[in-house]
Length: 123
Image 1 (cartoon, rainbow, N blue to C red):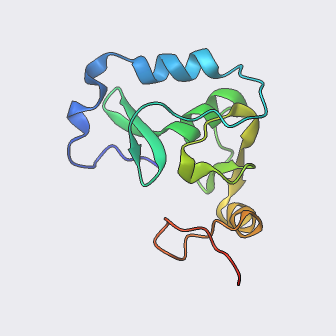
Image 2: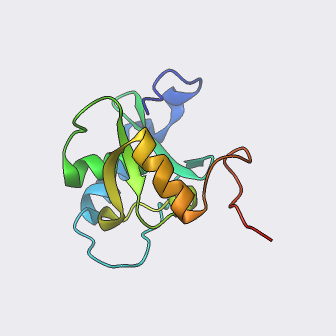
Image 3: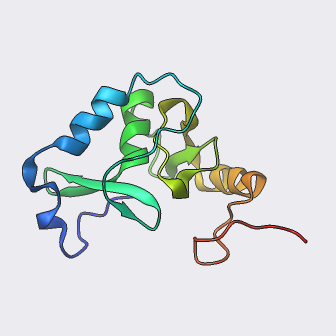
């Protein structure tokens, strides 16, 4: 998601590049555990700005390891179900269409039916 037009983006990271450096340094992380984004978050997802454009951290990492999306309809999807916990583990990220990602969310029980904050549970 391109977030470059949201108010306040000018103050993010002030050009220091720590977020991008961190992602590049961790793109070869091969562990199975979730690698949690250590910088700013919005709605649970990690985010940052580079060259005046806001990025979701998981989408940037996904593109680092998988290349650019094949179409504008593709988004970064988490196989671990911990996107809202700011997971950026390269092995947990893949490019999927919205409908494919929604199926994953249903399988993980992380559908965004409660404002994007709650996991579904059945009594």
